[in-house]
Image 1 (cartoon, rainbow, N blue to C red):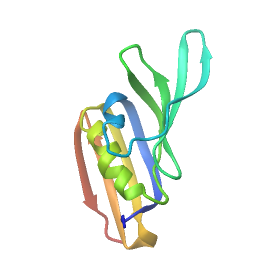
Image 2: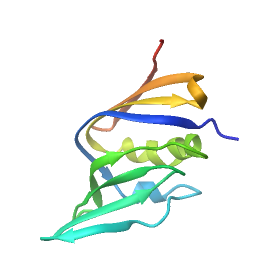
Image 3: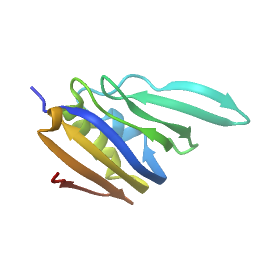
Length: 125
């Protein structure tokens, strides 16, 4: 049984670009990519990764997503975070800062991503 994320709060996204292919290298990959809109050669997509949430943004010609929204929580989200999202974030460009509340507040972590360097740290209340 996985330790799940109850709440994901994105604090900052700055030019975060995530490659699509690594998201599908997991033993249990996410659902298919959904095209949400296509206008003036801009393709907005969504990849649902966990029970609640995933990645959405603009698809680039080199199979990356310029992330506009990212969130993971719900059943299986702990495993999805480790097996699907983390490997892709390690190959990303740009910056992300988020706060994750695990299992009803058992632990709270700050996730920071900066050009593929991923760090997590416990937050004490």
